[in-house]
Length: 246
Image (cartoon, rainbow, N blue to C red):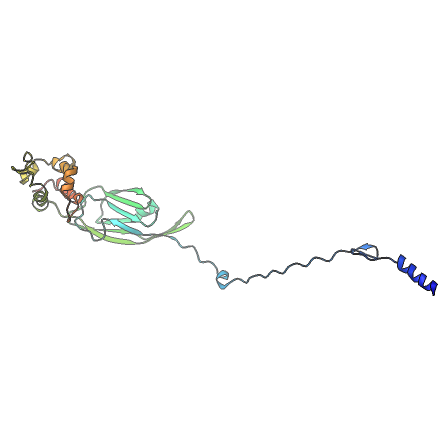
């Protein structure tokens, strides 16, 4: 019994051992570490649909001067147009139309402000139509669309002293420019009196017009019906376009 026990003890002591990474004396690869499972979100219906094409830049007119329907406009008035965003100058100028047609020039004080200045006076007492031809195109890889616009305004009729100037003189000048007034040295009671201070066709050289631009005269002519600038525009038209007609 002793010999059997001794034999078993010796076999257990000298038998080959298996340790981590070894099996029967050969290296064994370690089991790979478990990887965490990540849930993948399924795309929504909106995400799976194709994206719509980019919308073009839309250019529209915000406001203008003269404004739609405005009447009594000076025949030398510039037409000013304000857009909602900066626009391509070449496109806007090409699309601009004025009827009856008149020659003139374009200028831009800002990227969103177009000014058309007539080369000659517009016709008196005439309705004019401003319009923009619609344009859709692309430039530098960007789409743009100029919206169609259309509006009208009317110029004032031919100015005369009796109809247009005398009412202003009576309202703002005669009180001082009479023989008993504070400015008796410069009488303005009659057409001949006023005509003495006018150079037909040249308002800026006419004392009647330049004096009215002085500050105290400018303030004196202010009123609830028309601004001083509107009244000065009437006088300027009378001198320049109507040659100080009676």
